[in-house]
Image 1 (cartoon, rainbow, N blue to C red):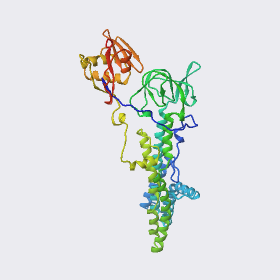
Image 2 (image 1 turned 135 degrees about the horizontal axis):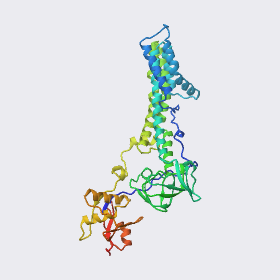
Image 3 (image 1 turned 90 degrees about the vertical axis):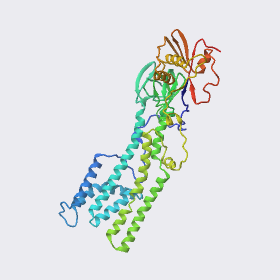
Image 4 (image 1 turned 60 degrees about the vertical axis):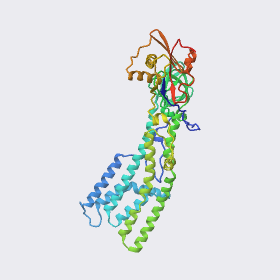
Length: 461
């Protein structure tokens, strides 16, 4: 009997362990940098400010309550409330000698207000405020992806210390602790199984969709999901040093890294400010028209270049992280545009990653139904993924599944069961060899399938 399967090695994670041992909070994630920092998402103060500026722009457009002919009181109020954070950040950038979007827009806002075009000034202010909020929301989504990764690990851990079991916070774990992981729980550490037997889902770490059998002495990765039995694990790496911690760190570094196109965009944004000012001066010298001069400053604003590029990169990295793909930085995201060949892991990527019975090869004089009935009955109590696939296939074929009279499981080998008074072995080639059962040497060799053998105990070489 053969089943689809694939084998993958454990993922190669970062080479150097970090000094820190506890997982960081999502708030510790680094900021992106394109001349200014934005930690906010869509908060109420920002929403109220945008709403006030939009209302002020509408009132100015319809000339509602204009007590002064030369100056729009509503327009000035809207610019003071809406433009304050923009001007503040522009001033800070001037002190740091950085040419940014805020500086370019502040010049345009001030110029429009100076010639009495308060509606134009308010629209520019509204545009910048909305752009800031959208940028903050994008950064917030990227950090939420990191927060989701952090929340995946358990914060409360059961450990055995001095012969007693107690629940402690994950930050209190120490190397050498004996950690207990119940069925359905997640391994909080990298370590070695001290006792117990189970199957672990390591897909988040290794990409292997098939649950991996774990017995005493087997390695365990943090973030693995325990599916069946209780495991006691000796902690060898905790927090940042675990394989899962390295994945989180890779996402954080990705958000801090800057792609070559992003550095180019920053330089171009700075040049554009100078270009806008020079073009405006030239326009004024030629036309002597203040409005035309202001128009040049507004149109040449650096917002699209300075903000659009990092927003696109951050959005792409954050979106990929939520879908389970870790992109290590903007430079790698940019490099995807030059890729012409993609190599993918098959199992769980191009396939569903679930084993299914593909063929039953009975011995001479034995029917396929007899082999399936014996294997399904023996595997009826099994928690092994391949055994469950055999039972599912028997159910799909409408075959009755008999409860075994006796059931013994040997980890790494297979099952010996008594069915209707007869002893049946179901497992790998090693189990058959242990019981003196000869199997065809070429069976399932090189066909991409994992064999599951079923044999009566009386069979021999």
